[in-house]
Structure formats: structure tokens, C-alpha cells
Image (cartoon, rainbow, N blue to C red; front, side, top):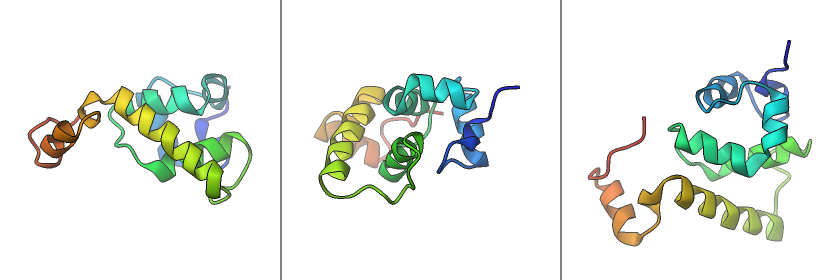
Length: 110
């Protein structure tokens, strides 16, 4: 039987459900995809973007605690996160679209 996603450091039981909605059903599948592709799939499946969730995933796949990310490494991950977020949800790609989204004009992914 494959190991659940939640066997990866920093990921709990709720992660199993979120990743399953994105079609990622095991820890091995997640490792094979890597953090960026897996996070993009989460967003495409309707998970709301959250920077800490992204870098906790990155750290977990490296076997590191979620709060082990600092300085330049964290800044670089923030850039990657922003790129993934804007690609996965084009509504976040422009100032106007972000404001329309904030006002509730752009429908949320479900």
C-alpha cells in the first residue's frame, strides 16, 4: 500500500485530502512531482494560495522543519510562490484582476 502524503514532514492528515483533490494520492507521487508542480496542482484544484503552506511543503520534501526557511532562501521561495500562484490562477496576475478578486467580482475556484 502506498504511503500517504501526510507521511512527509510538515504535512498532516488534512494534506491527504487536499492532495487527493489534486490527483496526488501518495507520498511517492508528491516526491516525483516536486514541490512546484504539486503546489500548482493544489491551486488548480481549488486550494487557496498560502505562502507558508508552499514553503512548508518545500521544506518537508527536503526533510526539514517548516520554520527552517530564512533570508535569501525564503525570498527566493516567495518569488517562486508568486509565479506559481499567478500561473495557476490568472486572476492574480494583474493589479486590476487582484482588486476585482478582492471585491468578489471574480469567482473563486471550487
